[in-house]
Length: 135
Image (cartoon, rainbow, N blue to C red; front, side, top):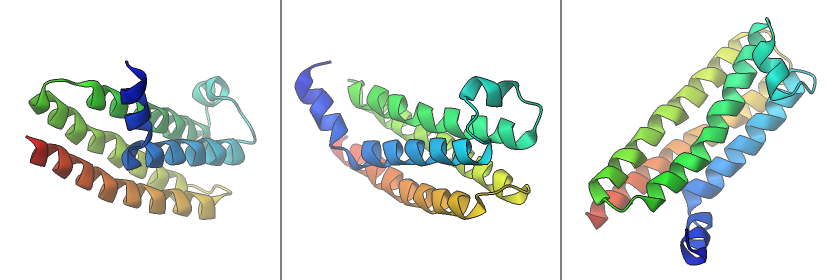
């Protein structure tokens, strides 16, 4: 990847919002699991830890998917990759809903993350539309 395309990706709103969602997800997971690392959350028997792990892993996966989408040269495949991002956003939203229904501390933070995910959905829709218009 060239330096100029790397810079362009970092300037994308969807990329920046995905980074924000990841950071917030990691902070929430750390808070509700009492600073457990990812491996400890994954190996835990507690539902809260399992869903916190899923939350962080799914949020972490958004950024590379955006980079893959931007680096795709075939415009049709690029649009398909961009549309597939919605699956990960929806799965993150589902995990936040599940965490909120369990008795966890930090439900206010989880609500904040859901608000950010709703914003990401809007940004995603605009992103896909912009790629379709280029086609």
